[in-house]
Length: 460
Ligand SMILES: Cc1ncc(COP(=O)(O)O)c(C=O)c1O
Figure 1 (spheres, rainbow, N blue to C red):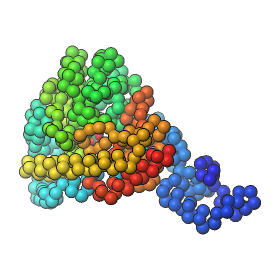
Figure 2 (cartoon, helix red, strand yellow):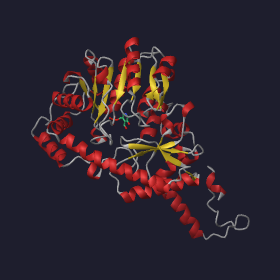
Figure 3 (cartoon, rainbow, N blue to C red):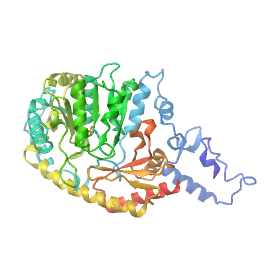
Figure 4 (cartoon, protein in one colour):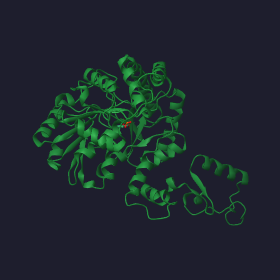
C-alpha cells in the first residue's frame, strides 16, 4: 500500500472513496491492520495532523528528529549545546528488559538473598543508616574491599588510598576527561569504541581532539596511533575485552602502549568493564599491573551485579587522588553511602566471588545457546557472529546492504532490544551489525527473539 511509506497524513476516507482507489478490502480488515501497525510502533497519530509512518522509522537522520521534537515545548531558543545533550538522551535511553538488552539482571543472574539481608541490616542500624556528608573518595570500607578484590583477581597494583568510588565507569570516564584534557589536547580512542566515551568527547564540542585508532585482532594499533597523534594526552582502551568486538590486547601491544605513554608523558585509561566474565581459561591480567603510575584503571559493578546500583571505581596513580576527589566533589560530592556499605560487606563476606562463579556459568550457557539459535535461524549470508569467549554481549555482523539502525528500530517495535554496532565506529570505518546482550532470558524468549531478528534481517 503506497500511502504507508509517506509522511503525508493518511486520508481518513480511504476505504470509502470507492471508484479510483477501490482495493476490494473490507473496512474491518483495514482498521485491524492499522491498529496492529500502531501497536507495533510503525504508525503514529498526532492531533490535527492524522496518521503517519512513525517519525523514528521514516526519518533516518536521528539528529533532525531530536531537534524537531525535543524542544517543541520551549518558548525561547534552546541553549547552543542543548541539541547535543538531547541527542545523548535519545540515544542512551534504556531499552526494555527483553532479549537482547545488555546487562539485564534477572532470574539466577540476580544477586542472591544475601544482598537483601545485608541491605536490611546495614541500612537499619549499621553504617548505612542516615548520616551527614561522607568522604568524596568513597567509604574506606568499600575502598579496602575493592583494593583487595582487584589486586587478587585483576593483578592491579594499588592501595585503598588510590581507589576512588564512582557512579559507574561512565562517571569515571567523565572525570578523566575533566581532569586530563585541556583545549587543543588530542586523545586516542579505539575504533570501534564505547559510545559512552565517544559521546563525552563529542559533547565537549571539539571533535578534532578525538583521534580514532583502528583495532585489529591484537587490539589497538599502537603504531597507527603514534603516526596519527604522537603527543596525545590520553589513550582510552579496553585491553581485556575490546569493546564491542571482544578480543584481548596482545602482550606486545600492551608493552608498546606503555612504552609510548612513558616516552610521551601521556596517560592510559583502562576500561575493564566486564573482564571477570571470561568463559575459557583465566581472565587476562590488567594493563595497570604493567604501569601503575601511567594507567587509570576503571572497573564497574554494573555487569557482575546490576547496573542500577551505579557503583564503580577508578584506581588512580599515586599523587592524583586529591585531584580526582576535587573533580568528584564538584560533580556530585559522593555516591550514596548506604549502598557502598552494603557492597563492601557483600565483597568482604565472600558473596561477590560466589556470585561471579555462578553468573559465569549462566552466561556461558546462554552464550552457547544463542550461538546455536543464530546459526540455526539466520542465514550465514545475512548475519554471522564475531567469535569470542568473554563478556555479556555478542556482535552479530550484518551483510553490507542492511541498515543496522533501522533493523534495531524495527526489532524494538517487534519487542526485541538490540543496539546497532555502526554507532561505535568512526564514519570512515562503519560496518552494520547488532550488539546482543546475554542475560538470564528464558530459552523460549530467546528463540522467539532470534526468529524476529531473522525475519527482519532476511526481509530487507
Ligand atoms: C565498555 C563499557 N565501558 C563502560 C560502561 C559503563 O558502565 P557503568 O554502568 O559502570 O557506567 C559500559 C556499559 O555498558 C561499557 O560497555
